[in-house]
Image (tube, rainbow, N blue to C red):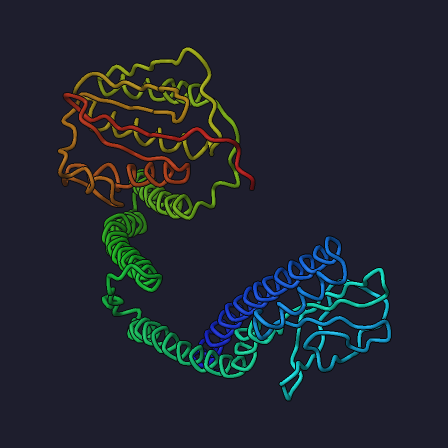
Length: 453
């Protein structure tokens, strides 16, 4: 069954059920009100006649029956019967079914009054007098139940009309839903791996379809961005690997043709160094991909960030001295626990310290600082070098992002990209700020409980 037809039938059924509920509610309330009104009137009338008999006896009751027949509503039922149910006084011609000489109180029955040709439904009160006679009073209930009878006769028509209107509403709703879904499907069919420029039109009505269209368009924007980033990464990787591969090939070729053992040994050492540099580039790219895909979270454990930073500062202090810089570490006053990947976080901080030594050692001061907090931990590495202009910091974060050719000899431009990917793995951020002068790199890592893996 087509989806549009199912939606139409479902909407029609819901409309029918809602209309039936409304009709049933009106019927019950009308019926109950009509019955309650007639019941109250009949009970009061029976009490009045019983009081007249108790206070005045047979003579007063005879006068009350005569007055009722003369002045009361023509729909009023009044009768005084012998114990054998033969009428003494009143306007009752027949009673079906005949009331047994047992129960007193409120009853409903078909009665025919004098002058009427057909019996009608009546609400009656039966009282037995001390003389053994039966006093019957009440009212014809037909007028009180007129609305109920009208609703009962009109119920079938109302149900039919409700069903047709519900089906019509369902068809209109299904057409609207089908039109909106078809517009989304048409755009989806035009999307291909080579063309991600298609977008779903948004009517700005604020309905669920607009929300869906907005989400799909945002998803397409993200996919387009990822495709563009993948293209740039592929181009950058091919470009940046070309130089070390070419140098590796040249060194291997020269080593193969060298006749002097000392020269050949030196050339083979160059081959090994070029191969190591190539391996470092590929390892960094692999770690970035793993960090961005969050696969490293299975190796999360608790560790002290302050202790980790102290180990790295001690390890890089000789290198900083060799470059003419003084590496200072501000040890926090208390342990700084973090649930994360210790090895990857050590790699991220190492990259930041290496960048500071490589590009900021001319300033003579490099500072490593760990700042604990209730919600996040900040790991800062600052230098007094030339820094990075604010308008070029996004470029420095990109993979293989190098701001000048002088840096290409010593690195592949993956240090900040890897640090940012590792921060993302920990739900954190990498920030670049001005150190006045120099560059201040900040790893902001949120404090959270252990993850379930």
